Image 1 (cartoon, rainbow, N blue to C red):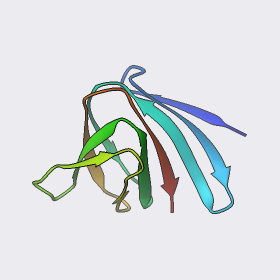
Image 2 (cartoon, rainbow, N blue to C red; image 1 turned 30 degrees about the horizontal axis):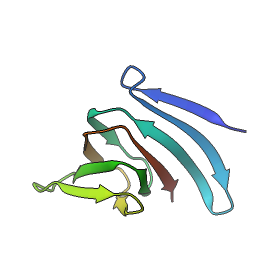
Image 3 (cartoon, rainbow, N blue to C red; image 1 turned 120 degrees about the vertical axis):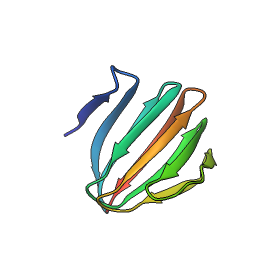
Length: 93
């Protein structure tokens, strides 16, 4: 069944579900800056809007637009800058 998640006073919301390949979430983020940690490898695909990402250990920020995917290593952190309401799909591996 579905599980809902809410972070940063409701500015980030997601719905978790199970796919044939494993767990996943779909979600939305309001404009703002966020930092998340991972416990598994995460493949995030921007489905609308854009996300500016900084992975742990990187000094550079990289922009991802609709239908672009980035990977976050297991047991890591990443920062996001969201300029406009954006949505995503995350696959956990």
